[in-house]
Image (tube, rainbow, N blue to C red; front, side, top):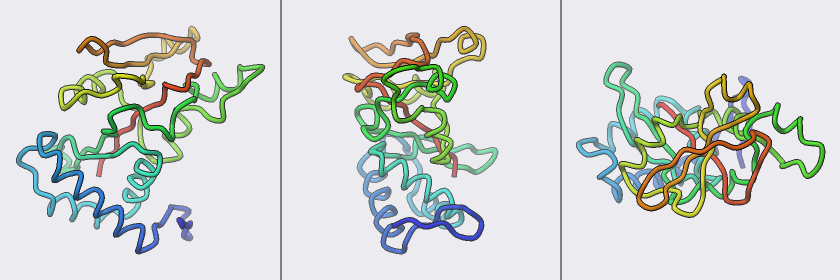
Length: 192
């Protein structure tokens, strides 16, 4: 069970922490094509030095995002994790884009929205550019779709963007921000 400490940040139990690190290590080693030349020992050291990030990774894992290292920022020294589940994470589907969209619905409101869920998890939605970058590492969202960060001018007019992969091509689409579907969720990123 997760619990809050005095600083209101989430803390994993020792068992959760160990289980998560083992899962992340196994996924890292199984998918070396996503991070050629990286060493788990370096990633592990970063994770140990940033326990609050472990909680966010736990939330990504708990919602079936299957987070994995996809890059390293040489300027900041941070490792970059993306949700790498084959389809949009099951625990984050059937959500509209943001709070404004959720509040605008009169009937059949979804339980949540993508932007607030991501913020609560301590992660950020992928941008369209990040989504396309991720698709170079494998084939994702062949049956589902994922909300991506929407430019302010589109959102101001009531729209939001989402992406998927069909016909061996990555597509970006638009929809009303208040829409939600069982096959649409969101993918996140985290820097550690």
